Amino acid sequence: MEKYKISEEELKALFVTGDYGEEDGMIDLCKVNASVKSKRAGYDFARINLQNLPEAFASGRNITECGFNVVDLFCGAGGSSSGFRLAGFDLVGALDNNAKAAATHALNFPGCKTVCGDITQLSPKEFHQKIGKPKVDIVIGSPPCQTFSSLSQGKIKSLGKNIREDVRNYFYKNYLDYIEFYKPDFFLMENVPGFQTKYGGKIFGDFLKYIKEDLPEYDVKTDIVEAVHFGVPQTRKRLFVCGYKKKYEFSFPTENREFIEDGQEYVTVDQAISDLPKITDDWRIDAGYYGKTENLTKYQRFMRAGNGDIVRNNICRVSNSKAKHMFSYMQPGQRYMDLDDEVKREIELFDSFDSSVIQSRCRRLPLDQPSWTVIAHIGMDGYEYIHPTECRTLSVREAARLQSFTDDFVFIGNMREQYVQIGNAVPPVLAYSIAQKIRKCLEEKQD
Image (cartoon, rainbow, N blue to C red; front, top):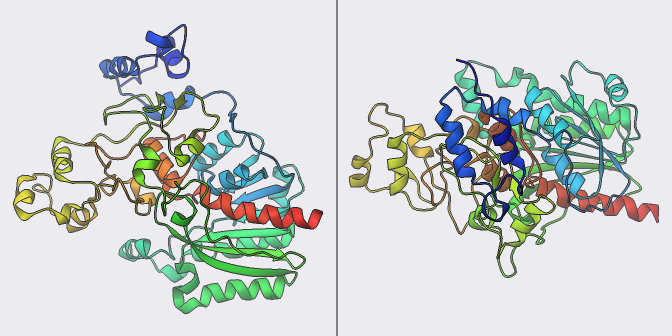
């Protein structure tokens, strides 16, 4: 079937107000959406939304630059990169082997040379040449964590794979090769806490031993950080390893209340996403007007800074009628397994298949609490991330908000690829807080 090509008029409606608008210069996006749906011609979300992107990404956010350069290895879509940019660092090079994630990174960091390649096949010297041989002050990176994550080990074993033989266990060695090449003032590596304890701590011990013996000019500190303490609206524990040359003194931050309302302990789901565009699960255009412009929370104001009136990536999966029927019974924060047996008998979703795993995963997000951890599995199905009040699963932008990507960050690829990019990312607001501490260390030694 031929893919539907969006019309020039509809294209303009996605990005402009004024001459093409209706009342108060606002396009009726519901009408545009209805027009796209009415074509019924194999709508290609990834292609249409890619072709409609602006030629060059430019944020209106005011950032005070610090003059230090960063390279991001295993960069993914750019969670850590975003945090360091928000703290004023200049991203000069990035590397990832996932083509769509690398494309998203390249779009959002136009001044950075983003390389799509395999770190095991690309030497540090070759990479340095590809990015134009800039000065590099800091190297950051998040080697794949699947074999250290308790959520992923069962799946890997079920496929008949030997976790100890999985090459992803040893990407940290390639990462350290780049550290040895660049000799940056600081390096920062992120992973799941399981990296520290898996196999009795043998791999992590080997990692620290390598640094001590081959990179003796560095001191190293490690910390398991809870993202919710830094204004990220989800509970998410991550291990960070920071290496720094011995002339510096560094300690990890313990919290950041910049985005948390006064008198509260964290950013809730409602405080994070309640201002986003109002959509339905049959929405077919990803650009939309904010649903709320007044009484914004600290977090919402930070997310929206410099972004204008329109925000991208507002699309979610279409849920079937049986799934929506189940959603209607669930209260904010409730699991399917918590429903009364009598209510469960009314729900037909699981009549045709019996999956205790899926049943246990079905959860409606809370309103007045942070979200649980947003993981890459959100790209496979959304039943663990049901909207707190609406009969649909989370949109890509809502998931990005829970991961703390600012609204001027645009994801490309098909819907599944966008969700996976978000779930795999380091929360930018968390990376921002650590980057601020690193910046302070660097600037103090300059004075």
